Structures are given as structure tokens and as C-alpha cells.
Amino acid sequence: MGHPVLRFHWQFTDHEYLQVKHMQETFRALVAEMGGEVYAPMPTREDGYGIAPGGVIIHELGGARMGLTRKPRS
Image (cartoon, rainbow, N blue to C red):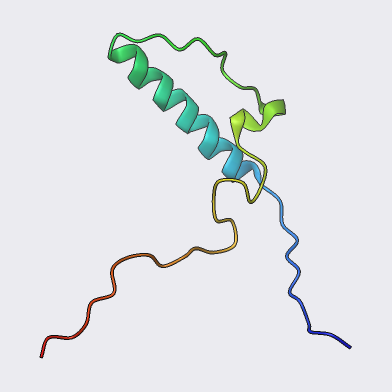
């Protein structure tokens, strides 16, 4: 019969899109304040404000613990 497999169904909400919009605006303001110039136009809501498709660059459904594993001192 095989092994059961989890399936996740999700989508970005206005909350995530507003976070990405804020990030874009903040980064652009920082670049301008430092004397730089952003050549790419500000992404629109229709473009998701530049957010990558799900699963490409972020952990939408969890994360991974990373770090050094240390042996206990003797």
C-alpha cells in the first residue's frame, strides 16, 4: 500500500505581502540614505512585491536547527 505522505496546502496572505512590501521600501530607503541608487523598479502587488515562489528561499512550513554539536566535557 505504500507509506502515508503529508501534504501541505498553503498560500501567502496579505500579511506576508505587506511584510515583503515593507522590506522592499526599507531596503530602498537604506540604499538611498547611503548615497546609492536602486535601478530596478519597485515590484508591484501583482508581482507579490518581489517575494519568491513558495519553497524557493524560505521555510514556510518550519525550519532546520543548525549549529555545532559539542561533546560534553570530561
